Image (cartoon, rainbow, N blue to C red; front, side, top):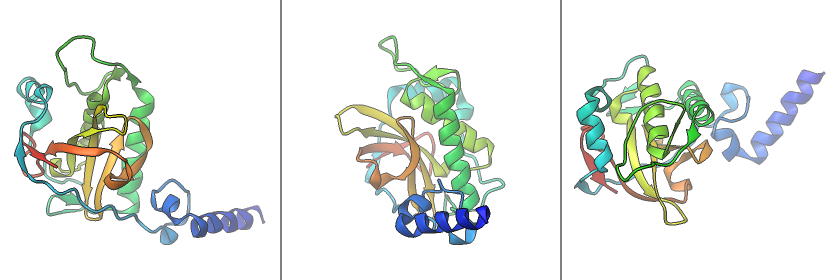
Length: 201
């Protein structure tokens, strides 16, 4: 009886709030989950990336290498969004947000780094990118992105490019959101074609 009641409650929530279910945050049967659609950010041409990015590429070349898809389905540089991949993206976002402590840069030089117990926004995003690459995501689907928040502050997030659009992993939010639902102004991102290059948005 308890299982039946739980199923009915979950079904009612899914019917009333389909956008919540589509974000992958409810434990509902797979067949009743409608995967979200995000749309894609439009790139407008090449641009320079943040200076800290180029220093990182010079000192840690593996962080800027091309990686092909392994153990995940991908097409045209985007991963195929499934229940499993959405769950993995969500888990990585939450785990790293919980494991790291926010810490602003102490000097005038913007240092980009992967891992550690603390860091600023790009360090969170780089750590999530590295974690998803270890899971086999192609580099073309994991794009470091520069944005401006509603407060007018410069910020960095990780954009995950899928066959259902671009989703944002953010250290300021535990939810994985479609890029257009963040409220941010998108400035530039890594090129999907070359992880050492950036494009204007």
